[in-house]
Image (tube, rainbow, N blue to C red):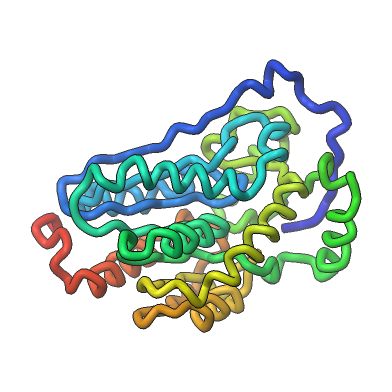
Length: 304
């Protein structure tokens, strides 16, 4: 997360602002379990594609991938979104499908999506069987985050500039895999503020600073609720996470009230572990954890 700031002097037109995508992907399974996969801030459900295919095709799960509020809309719309709207989009997706399918419901999320998964588990305890937090983001303290950001960001939040300022991500983009990193760079390097062509696949190349402040507010809201969470919690994080250190997983592990909890550390990935080198390890680790919760009986006939 290299902090190169940009300012949007010409907001997009009201015509563009009318665009809003709030559709959710639902893959109907053949087994008796449902998995919510929640993407990260300024990301896309495409981040969860590998996990969705693994759990749907190989394990028979019904998989729900909510699209966070205003993700897919022009960045001028996204930057105005507040954190309760992000949670609302996840919550509404959960309410829509929770009674439609049999069996336990699990929630998993990447980065901010991990925090939204925990919020879902806290509100609907007794209805969420377990949570898998993938690269949870409470502190931006990874090896690629400049120390100066700890000083600059609070100052920026205190000024109106937060509403028009952005930073543009640079390598490695949370990805250690060189081929994927190269594809992302090709798009990000040439993208403009109004470029929407690659957003569905790669997410937004520009990150509104107003959203980073919203993330901080979400974190403060969630932190006080962690001790009340007593559902099983799994934390999966890369030792070399470029955006958030292992401190994030450790903090959650020590704070939640869950009796069943675990940390899984990856050795060959960066932040976006759902798409990086060890995505298969992530999928198998999640599957193993869910089996512990269900006693190994869930979807036994669909192991294929």
